Length: 253
Image (cartoon, rainbow, N blue to C red; front, side, top):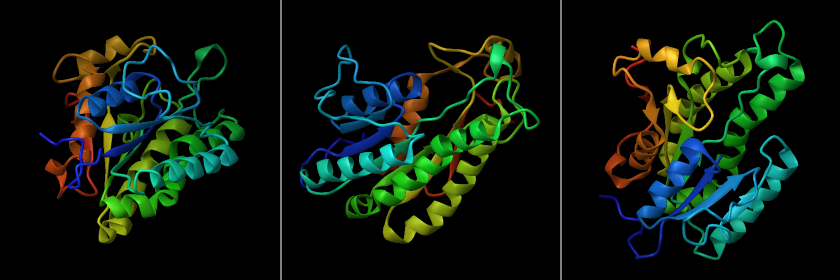
């Protein structure tokens, strides 16, 4: 079992976006349970009901759709890391937006406003690029890992995910390969996970109907996704680089 401390005995540190709910919330609990320090990034204020240690002190309020806010957040993160030796052991780019049109309609490639395309790509694609580049020195110092959260929608037309979301996730999958080639020589591993239908507090209407297409015959649990993220950030995955792991019960086959 990978422990949450490095060779010097200091706590390992994770930066996680989209930490306030669903997969992100489960990931915070998973890493915290193993002794990691988790810097959570969310556009939501910290919820004082969250149980992890020093959660409020380690929360960064950031709007990933706003480039200026993101830049300030990177500077804030670097300053906090410097206080602990300037090392970052893992960056998990989990935050993502999948907006709907009026009445809940799926935004397709014909009627999605360009402003919405730009917003989706800023959060789902450009923010991971800027965070990884901005925190490169700290990741290199720790020989850390990056995990990008893509989606099953990045490889097929999905009944609920819109065109902007799907193409942004496909771009993120491609980016993961490019980053693995570029960051790997510096000792930083870059991988992705592609969740399918995960049972979260907010499910799109009709999601349950997709279970028939899943070989395991059920929705996934957020804890199962968090476990995969933890594995990719752990020493057990020390030779895994450039992979996109499907966490979907076989729905992609």
